[in-house]
Image (cartoon, rainbow, N blue to C red; front, side):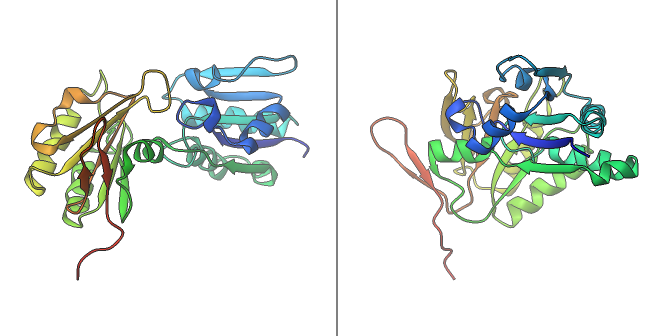
Amino acid sequence: MSGWVVIAGLGPGDEALVTPEVSAAVQEATDIVGYIPYVRRIAPRDGLRLHESDNRVELDRARHALEMAAEGRRVVVVSSGDPGVFAMASAVFEAVEAGPDAWRALEIRVLPGITAMLAAAAKAGAPLGHDFCAINLSDNLKPWALIEKRLRLAAEADFAMGFYNPRSKSRPEGFGRALDVLREACEPERVIIFARAVSTPEEELRVVRLSDATPEMADMRTVVLVGSSLTRVIERDGAPWVYTPRSVPA
């Protein structure tokens, strides 16, 4: 088969953070597939078809990309950040596993990108300098009970944490429940970073303590970073630096 699928990460927003590898794949593509705002980050050109879709049709989107590749087209499936972090790479392989055998013969490549958690951490300093985990707070694809269990266990293990999809109009109460879990498991002084629209003109970075955190500080453009018990804040003129030491006392 001459067609292929590339699953690419467009980074957190700034075009300077799109990797050269991803830019080259987009230039070779005949078709771009993805969620509406991500596809609109791709400049139109002759010979390039743009296929926009809603954010809750990931498997349909993946199947469409695979069908076009099987017809010989060069398809780039775009995600923001990194495509392997709560994004389209998993959906494409899920579609391959359940689809026709011919799809398994396709050339499929995953091209990494800078995910929101890492972009936010870099802006703040080094809050993920030791062991950390990432948790998607959306209960659209998994039950809230599982989210709460993972929050409690991550806090008990003293990981730094990155929260994706913390609060939306359809899920306004979930992040407040997550903060309640943290308050039961962590000290009030635990450092929390609210990083909104990192690397875009709307970027906002707020460093607070757990005792001062409120649900309204987050929305769907926000990634929330929670420090471990060892995370430190360096106060200075302007925004503070936040870091987690690389070592843990015995």
